[in-house]
Picture 1 (cartoon, rainbow over the protein chains, first blue to last red):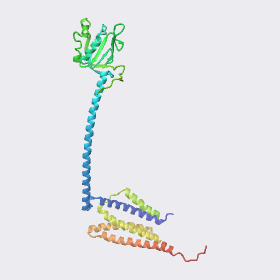
Picture 2 (cartoon, helix red, strand yellow; picture 1 turned 120 degrees about the vertical axis):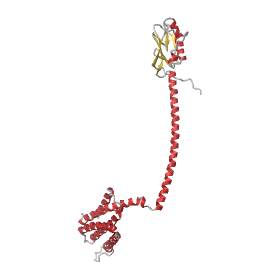
Picture 3 (cartoon, chains in turn green, cyan; picture 1 turned 90 degrees about the horizontal axis):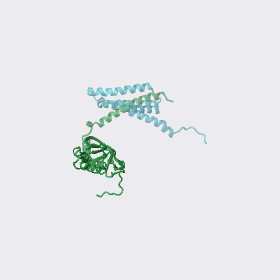
Picture 4 (cartoon, each protein chain N blue to C red; picture 1 turned 90 degrees about the vertical axis):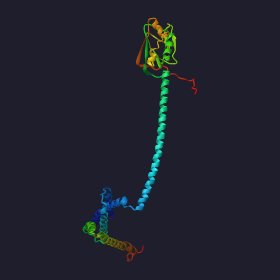
Length: 223
Length: 125
């Protein structure tokens, strides 16, 4: 049971507790105030802070060096990565394993079927003129492409008979490709017989990838 | 006795949480006010032990002494008289006198009584 005197004493002690905590906080602030510290203590504090500061400066220098080294490695890595990406892209284009786009020329031969013997040499002339990717009637040409005559003596590409009109698309430097109809060469022959091929520059040619992706199991790269 | 002690703890916690900033210049007036309030508390405890406790006297003494001690120390500083030290001396002496009385009463009541129990004959078991 709570007695009367306990209540009044508790109230007084509560006020005392309040005063004690306020005074305690005030004393803490006074003691931590630098202006109230002894000179010897301040000298020790200053010395410790200087040492800490020097240590931090040293760490900062080390970290900056590490950062520079890492950045350099990163840049070299990025350059190597970009170079590898470029090499891979070139390989894809050469193998025909990827869709490509670019400027070039389109050769159209209408009203006449191209001779099976002429097609490979026209393709060769295009490669020699700087073509980087070629497609015939939508069929991408690569190292595995076969050209032969079918039973009707019509030209075929990878076994597909080439129907009229023949459209050869070539991506490459348009200025040199446009001169592919070299006099005396096979493409020029069609001009001599009165059925010249139409050759025009096109800015945006899109060529499909080869249908069958190449797989190399026996050839080994020699370094 | 737990209620008064609880009151002290609660007061301390409240004061710690709601930190009222007291300027450092008033810290010494606060300290003498604290001493005066401590003196009143111990006077109250003495009254409880002696069964002469009067809550009104205790509370009025507590508030009056606390305010007076702080104010006199402040005024003394303003007029160039170190009443601060006089207050410390006065309340300090009273505080320790009260403590001595409390100690004496507790000792007489609980320790001496225990060592010299009643002399009435007790039936043997």
